[in-house]
Length: 260
Image (tube, rainbow, N blue to C red; front, side, top):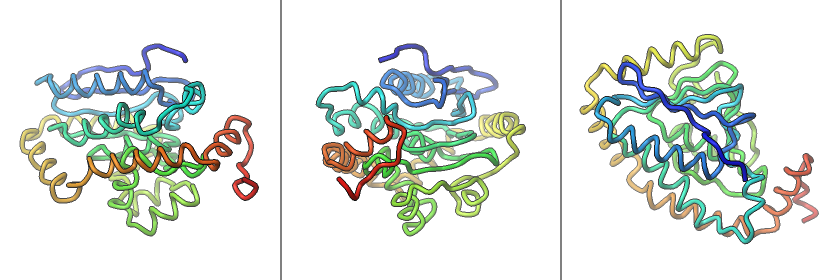
């Protein structure tokens, strides 16, 4: 398992930038999750931080969980993994009493999609592509995707995206309410920074209370859903479909679920 510093943080004009930087596709490792948890905890405690901007280096926002790392874990419990990693991270983002804006370029999938959906606002490059991803390796959605995606685009659309693993392009994401704004790729960094700075100059305490209101009104069962996702992922992770999906991914071929 590779170790290193996989995120970069900077604070400017009240905006805490948290940037994913794990080449080539910002696949999320255990170290990276821990570093994200620490960064959001610091953002919560630092009064100078008035807005968080979640960004990523490279052409891909995040391909989701690093599957090669998971493959090295003998007898891994998917439930225990989620309870230690993505579940608390998603709750941190939703409970942070400050606005969180995600700036998304390229592909985002799996747990990376969950992180983006947990943010309060999303701005995307016109080249962004949103994929649920889990079905591609025989797993069920986790990282609150099962709750947040239907809330944003509707159950039918979310079901199709989850079952078929078809990407949602940026224009469709905007039309469906998956993102708030779409800009050209060369303007994403500037537009996101300007928006985050504007948010940081606003009534952040009132925004935090509004966020509590939204959580209560729309996401009152978030913690329970995260726990149930972990339960179902434990079942899926021990199934033959995931075994075939993971083998196919590592062998760079299409999975054959009919045979298995």
